[in-house]
Length: 393
Image (cartoon, rainbow, N blue to C red; front, side, top):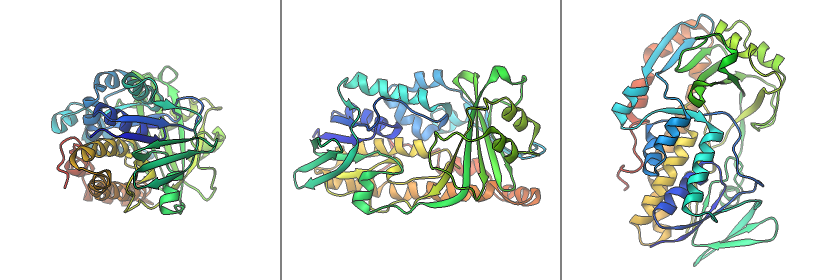
């Protein structure tokens, strides 16, 4: 039966879940604390496991047009740039998994999802509504806001991110532990770079105590750079905090000339850095009429490029679960049961990659990559997952 579903948060996870639920016939209301729709940050990666859902929503073509399909995933040594491992993306990824691998700007992706939701119901998104908490009873859920207003529904989906108010009420405050890493982000217009500074691929430079990720956005017009560095200087956990360009330059001294060129070409007033924290994934994230989704349920570090993909998968599996059980409570348990193990594995693998990418010497890096084929491993279990067809038990 169709339900009235409240979603807290109009980020990527909340909007993709809303589109899936609305397509299935549910009435959805989305509540966002910001005064306007929008997304911050830079690049995002959509592998086949998430693209299956976006294709089902009719968004594949517009996402392809907005993004870049990288040729390969390439790991390189930090100084020489020597290739130490590569696996194909592009056509091979699509042939193997039935959907493409696409890299695009977060803001572009957010616009695409918001437009889809507004097509389905122009009145579904409510802005300037900061969540204060919720009250649950046997008949449904009341979502309370800091302005004193409230909303009533059959089901509440918390897509309110790392610092979820709803998760805190349900499970208590999540203990955030500093990982020892801070993440830099910059974007550089390609017109500023010498031709062929870096290949049209997902390039990961790995080295002692830090790594750097480079890939293209907006049809190749923009280069995205993310650098994770080990530091005792703990800063704010926010993507919008500017940091001095000189600190970024110092962090990558001695690294490959391509990395130097990218950093030298950056807008020196638009360098951002934030501290990365670990939060334990929840094992039980549902009650009778409330459930968590995305980072609210299973916050992950950015070392596997699957944070948004997991949230997109969540929305699709939740939608299927609601169609497979007679009560919301039973459906939420089905949803949770079929997401906990996979999302926990992704969180653990992402955390493990932090150590792999920061090994203390070239010899250690070579030995570690020789032991494990990253492409074969990810193709086997990560990218091959289809949330629309996987058996739910």
